[in-house]
Amino acid sequence: MSTSLVTEQQSILDTIVLDGNVPSKAIWPIAGGKGGTGKSTLTANIGVGLSLLGYKVILVDCDLGGADLHLFFDQIAPARSLSHFLTKETATLKEVLLPTPSENLKLVCGGNEMIGLANLPYMVKKKLLRHIMALDADFVLIDLGAGTTFNTLDFFTLSDDGLIVCTPEPHARVDAYGFIKNTVYRKLQRQFAKNALVKSTIEEFARKSGRKSGRISELLELLTQTDPHAGEVAKALMANYRPRLILNRVRYKRQIEEAHRFVALVKEYLSTEMDYVGYVRSDMKILDACERRRPLMIDNPKAPAARDIYTILMQGLQIPDRLHRFEADNSRKMAEVAKMEAKYW
Ligand SMILES: Nc1ncnc2c1ncn2[C@@H]1O[C@H](COP(=O)(O)OP(=O)(O)O)[C@@H](O)[C@H]1O
Ligand SMILES: [Mg+2]
Figure 1: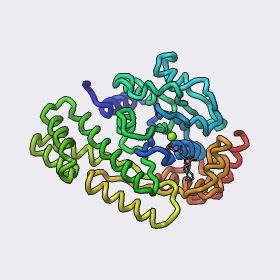
Figure 2: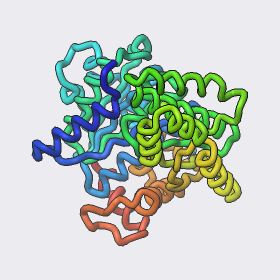
Figure 3: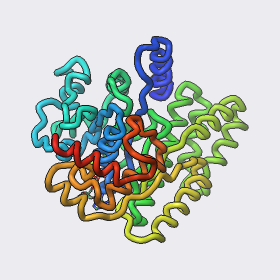
Figure 4: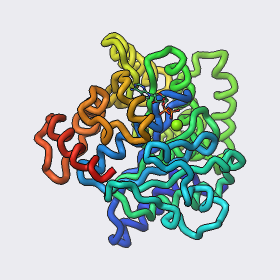
């Protein structure tokens, strides 16, 4: 394994900048550790929100074990899916893109026949990443599965600003913590894949971390003692890693305080600076929209959870309103635009 996915992505980005003909795009993998926290729901709704703000958005369902993102778009048996690309039935990822009623929003569906692909060979992952980078979009949102398989970890860490969706339950926080810890180790292992000494130091530390406090800051110090240059590289890698946290299914204010404590804990033990970008209330309207196989942002844009998603986009994630259709912080305006858009759905 010569280059890491991160390095690979950087070199692709460099080529794009050099070519100067492909607009830069944001890639947001969406994960969470635990199943059922709302990853697919938020992928669909944040995608719709970004398209309402005037961006070209592509949603990719990369939950290879439980692909269901297409259900938000009334696609029961999608004609084309990611599995067609992964099994080489199509030459490009672009060929499996499906339209949605919103012109700016397109979809790469997952396929239920993908369970066997749950551990993709590294070369296939690199190829998929290359094709994702070549898509014509401002934002590519990647819906990832639960758990910490290499697929999920690799796709999450290919971008430094992925989104983690967590719910207020302690179980969800434990799983999110475990997920972030795994991404940190995966990032470091990939970075130093060719440095045998550093690699074995990381592996040894990971093995013993159950017995000691296992703070990543200790590992970073250890790496600096082992190889000062590697220590600097590792610290820079960690400084750039800023996953964002969304708290979903919130019922009480105190749950938001708990999320802030979680962010502090992750910083202390995992040396990972997470940006808390906001919460989405627990809202039955999400379930109603689900039954109608539409994203909430289209189905009921005035619902409390839809307003929360709007707030996350405009305030938490600071996405500029490209079309200048909304006054700042005016979720009512956005709901009106969404209502107009809903006529096409
Ligand atoms: N904010 C919310 N309020 C109420 N129900 C929600 C909310 N977010 C998600 N759900 C529901 O929770 C279930 C799991 O959501 P889903 O997006 O499929 O999770 P994941 O993709 O993380 O497995 C779905 O039935 C969805 O409708
Ligand atoms: Mg899902």
